[in-house]
Length: 441
Ligand code: NDP
Image (cartoon, rainbow, N blue to C red; front, side, top):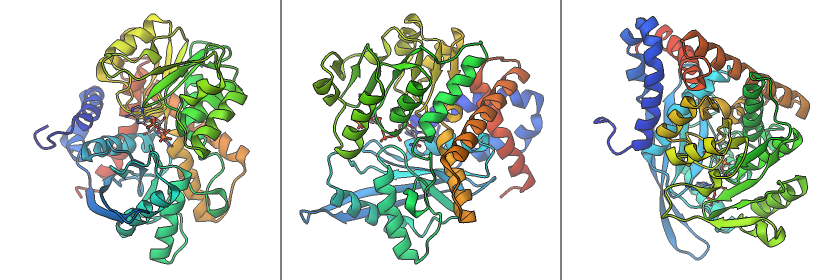
């Protein structure tokens, strides 16, 4: 903590992994001797840069840009870009650290990284977004490349932003390459990439439920967020016969007891992705649904306090605290699959584990997004595109494999059903072995 002051999210992510790895080090002290944990927590490189840009009113704006290149032992740095006012170095280090383990679990050759800016895209015109993206890429381009570092989207960075970023990279480098993933379909993108994180989180939940002989059919599901991950989580849940009943944004959440069906989800997607509206508008159209604004004075989130079977946190870090976890358990939730990164606080995680909840931590459950990004990179290298079905089948298989790895490792280390230990040890082993093979560099 002394070496990385003022970075609570990064400390939280490292502590959780370190606790799991204690089990591994007992059986395999060679990893301790090689000081892999001490090495793996230090980013290989951090780039911080000024992003000055002029908006459409002629005003000069200054943001901070970051890229944390965490680990390249098993492949080029890979991980999203986040544009959100809460972005700082500690948040990006936690995300980059998690990404190393997640990418390793996918079985694809990708190292870990993360980046972004404190730029707030909310409510900004397309022109402002384009100008910012171009200014951001004007510095980032010299640090990335299809064999070096391949960024993607995250909070505040979707298809539109990736387009503007790619256009600027291509202009500066005079080369058309797979330097970013999440690209548009007609310029190098992969089918299923927009859907992949949400679909993957649902596939992971299905795998966890199958270990108890259950399916998602008829299950009532709480979903938070209303962005990319939340939308495609709902889509897959509906397809599998489950009933999502909530969605949210930072201003509040909607509860629709009748369930969010295909038609309602279509309305949400149009409202969020085309009109860039707020989730409150759902209740303008569907009057029976209830909108609850965010109350900063509450020490819990009422979204997690409804009768349900499963929960899919898909907004942001630390959105489920100890009290929320208790409420979920009390309301009958027995399966939690994390679409967001580290959405549950450590005391929340302990409550899930102590109550025998099927709990899929983000670095395993939301790995579908980066897995399909890896498939996008493979297609770009081959200059070829797979069909929707091919990509979806590969995604399903990867999620199944990740689940199996976590499940088996948890059992092997004496903590059956503990997917946290399974994901942390499972993700660590491949990277650690590669680091040992490659010497002290
Ligand atoms: P989007 O920007 O598409 O959506 C984010 C959603 O979460 C919005 O509804 C947003 O509301 C809400 N949200 C964001 N920050 C906060 C906050 N501080 N408090 C309350 N609500 C908030 O992002 P994604 O759907 O892509 O990402 C969601 C989560 O999934 C993140 O944790 C991300 O790291 C993770 N993830 C994403 C992947 C991807 O492929 N996109 C891959 C793996 C993980 P508002 O509009 O009000 O800000």
